[in-house]
Image 1: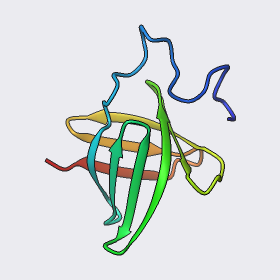
Image 2: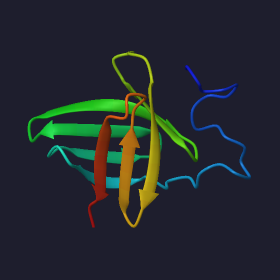
Image 3: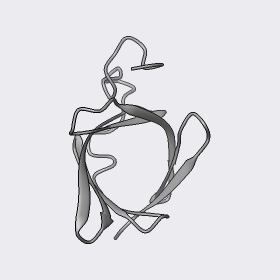
Length: 101
């Protein structure tokens, strides 16, 4: 994984790594989709009848996801605040997510 260092995504030092389950839940996307995250898996609904499954990893600064079809992991910088998450790719394209309560 480019820029991933010498560890797999999400395998940061346990003392400084993210809290397990930190991202678990239902997230609404600014483009109208919905993502459901549980542990190292995510399902992205682009419409009521269409979805794609992903493998995910994350550390304090980066979020990676890989379609289960075997495509490569894509890396994003991420930041969370008050139930909202911002993902930015290397071209600064943004995806905004809000945790559904």
